[in-house]
Length: 173
Image 1 (tube, rainbow, N blue to C red):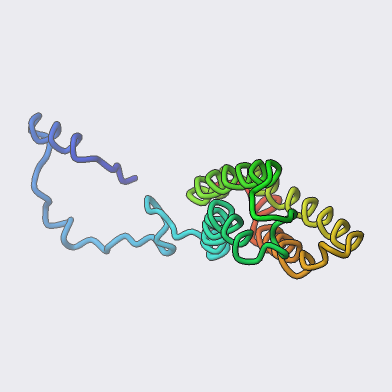
Image 2 (cartoon, rainbow, N blue to C red):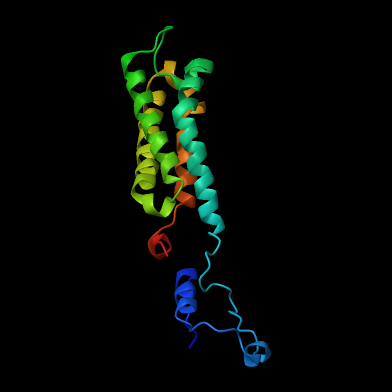
């Protein structure tokens, strides 16, 4: 059984006189290889986690700056108000989404440690998009939302749902 030492252990052994130069047998020995090269090393994260990290970063940035920008560029598809001012409810929803965006950026560092936040984002986005879709169908002046924020939120939720681990795969190693 091989005992592994760190640098501090080696200094202590040298000071006690127990550390010696390797003998001839050390040079004649077969090298010991770990066939999977996994012992003691960090393994690369799965591609699905990498894609989830990127998706969380994109969604986070979109929530922080993208939604407000789109309400200015395409108000009929992204802003549920009329006029040239930002109504109170829009200010509130932008604040909530910007806050969620910040937390999604934080979650992108260790997605498996933030699954509840990711699944909250998925399900709340599906619900929000569903409600907006019904309202857009019921009110002809809001139909442009069926081509703007409604499908965008459904797509965002679907992408995060597809990339997020479930069951045993969701358990961090």
